Image (cartoon, rainbow, N blue to C red; front, side, top):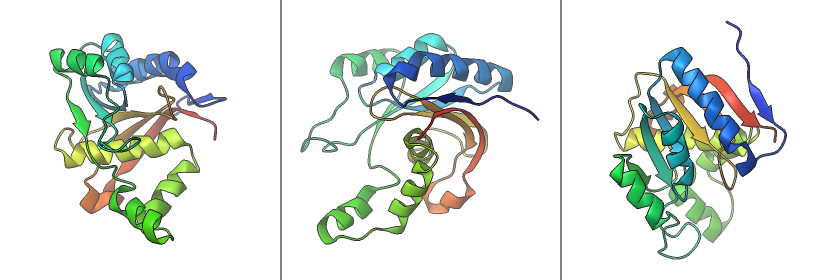
Length: 187
């Protein structure tokens, strides 16, 4: 099989529209309906929903306190629109940091999970995010682990990476399989 991968010269929001176009094309080719997208504010999830209206989209945002103590970064206006469209929003601990990051912040050092995250960042931050959010969504029972999905992530704002993968639960992380890279930013 020969497929094209699109590489973005720089990470960031300027790649969002093109990435969504690439995801739409590949989803149609493979018949994939389920997509999980990292969308802190909710804006990227809404853009994806507009571009691919008959898909099952799961929006993943940061957990409360990620930036500011006890605060969610999800835009209430976007949240209301996502709810109106029936798009679930997952708010929870990051699969590739969680308590491990708290331990490292307090005592120094690094945990095995942080090593996995850093290894995935060798590809790109967006690739790490794609893997992470697919685990989070699987653990929440929002996506299947026995079929291919498309995971969409990014770096800071917007989305710039997309993978076709079969997810896994946190408890069997090493069963996760990345099947294709649709696009990613160059690290």
